[in-house]
Amino acid sequence: MRDYLLTLCVTAAVTYLLTGPVRKFAIATGAMPQIRARDVHREPTPRLGGIAMFFGLCAGLLVADHLQNLNSVFELSNEPRALLSGAALIWIIGVLDDKFEIDALIKLGGQMIAAGVMVMQGLTILWIPVPGVGTVSLTQWQGTLLTVALVVITINAVNFVDGLDGLAAGMVCIAAAAFFLYAYRIWFSYGIEAAAPATLFTAILMGMCLGFLPHNMHPARIFMGDSGSMLIGLVLAAAAISVTGQVDPDALKIFEGSTRQATHAALPVFIPLLLPLTIIAIPVADLVLAIVRRTWNGQSPFAADRGHLHHRLLEVGHSHSRAVLIMYFWSALIAFGVVAYSVHSASMWSVLLIVALSAVGLVLLLLPRFTPRAPRWAEGFVPPRYRRREVLPESSVPALVYEPEASEGASEERPPVPAGVNGATAIGPRSRFPDRRKAGTRG
Image (cartoon, rainbow, N blue to C red):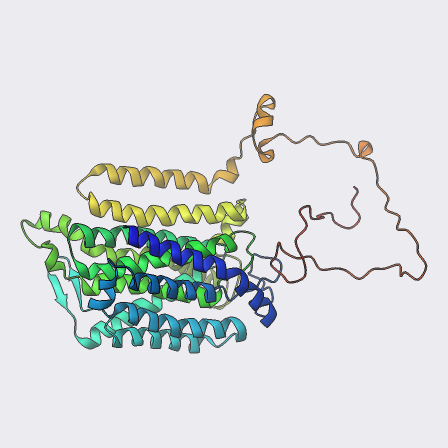
């Protein structure tokens, strides 16, 4: 466990330290796209954050290769090299897209090629567990098609959910943490060395996300872009493929005893098939709702709008940060709930706890509709949004008149100076007290 934590910390440190220089490089190269109608941010923000995340991945693999307890992963398996090859290819495609906006079909082809490169080096699904049947071996073509499909779906799911500051990195980090606990349990409790690569991949993935999050939280100083979202999606898919396709279910001795006992014992084996859905479930639900909504309104299913789940949370009244935290909560509830149920599937307490937390999540979703007001004696102890607002009469508000000083040679109108976003642009820092007054208002 110490070696995994050391690898995680090194990956997070390298990613964090490189994100600042990468941001300056993105500004210098003009990798700052114009704001679209569906975007939440209001000022151009540099992308290419995936560059720092890729070098964090390389640093994590390099450190793990020199650790005594993790060196066997590289000696007994070719999966780390397969992951690095596929990650390098998908990273290059993402960098080109962040800078030049390449076509969607080209990106899709690159994703399939990256998945094929990993398959050629041994990172593929060899068999899948089927309830009531047991282990079903796949042919080479079946394993290749299933692997490519899983990689492409996971990459695009992560890319689709990247709509708010810190949302994609946080959700993937949560899914990776749950996956790490599952893979580590398979490797440590059952003594199966085939689960070691997936444990290493998820530890490195957590480090990549944790190192990037401080720069990406609202207000974001830099976006990960497609170079980052596709990269972490590929690493997450590689971990799922490694456990699902390489760990033999028969080694766990799950298909023994009665049918009921075999069903409960087989749950840990089916977790790799379910855990990727923890990152796919929310964006896929958003995608289905978007297609239905646009088709119902007579629009193209591919037309961009502001009706996604994170947009709805903002419209309900949640702040940017609270909307992200709510989606974190649901991701953690699904991911860790599945893992907890796999460990104690016969216990009813885990199910009751998941139901109770789901109820708490529903209350949090509707919280802006029921904003409480604190009594006057307690207003000094609560945030300003919970205090009663006193409306002053218009006559009591003094009018402030701004009279600019006249100077010789100076024009009456000054050119507007664009404001920066707390380091999000190359123009300047953000003012701590922005002027939000409209033209013609007082004070």
